[in-house]
Figure 1: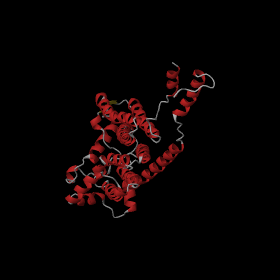
Figure 2: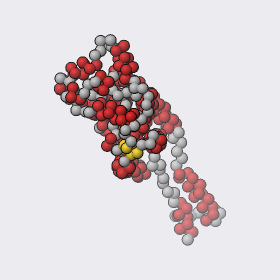
Figure 3: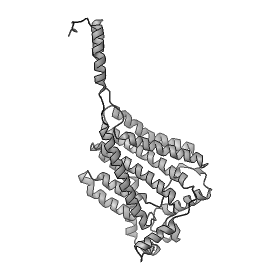
Length: 346
């Protein structure tokens, strides 16, 4: 009996956290985005397609749950990839829904000022004429369409590559920079709403036949309906980018290139691809030139804040192994179970 008790007392269960040190702020920002979005939906008397959003939540929640389980089993690289991809999707959906709430505000459109800033910086700039000229360069526009749409797959690929290479902290810093930049973008969108250059200059989609992405015109239509109060019910499939200033495509290009920098094999391809994506935001995204500049500035702010968050998380890594606390309990158990001066038989 004594030997059994001693053997139990000697058992020290191993334990490890299922949440990486840098992941906490990312989870917090994703939760904040959803709380703000849902509170805004209620406050602005909007409704959402519950069934569609629940289905999306289940799909997005699967990799997050899998990541937590994998980390608990010591598979940190796969865990980081799964959690990172799930949190990326959850954050993007939540903040996109938040932009729809913010789009219901009736502040004056900022397009005249944005167009005036472009003309002040480049006096001879004729934005509509430049886009019409580009619309006849089919190969150039096809390439611009492709690099512009790469924002849909680049982040996932980047998270996978960083996770597989063991750069876990870089994954969390990248996601923090992405989310902080989105929050700053939302704040500026609230103050300076716009419909985009195509709508402002009166260019229809038929005028630019080489454009595959209808986002510039869809964006303007959605924003007009939100501002007019005619769009009350938001479906998951309705979610689309409606922000003109600053350009988040430009911001994303900066963040993606920065996050890929530690990986030498993809450093320069990432810079070239994202440099092209930044430029393509003008003809494909229908952005003013000042939108691109503002997007780069916002990205720099997001990266700076994310790095500080990462440094704070790294300095807070004072994890104490549970075995120390269990060892104290073991000593107490031994002193109670075993007589003074005796030793457990081996």
